[in-house]
Length: 80
Image (cartoon, rainbow, N blue to C red):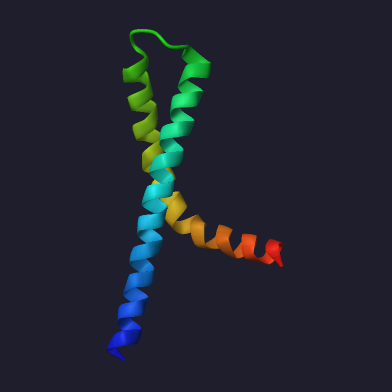
């Protein structure tokens, strides 16, 4: 019984860590690209990008944790 519980805990940890990594990387890349497209690169770029990244990160990480398993299930069905 302990082993089953430990596997479930590890699965939850993996899901949260995967969402954290995926959400962080996606929010960095997307906010950097969109900030360049919308405002260009000048002396204030880093501050604008950081603000955009932080706001995107607040949304992206929880969304990736929640939607990630659903996206995986959809991809597995499509791959059949």
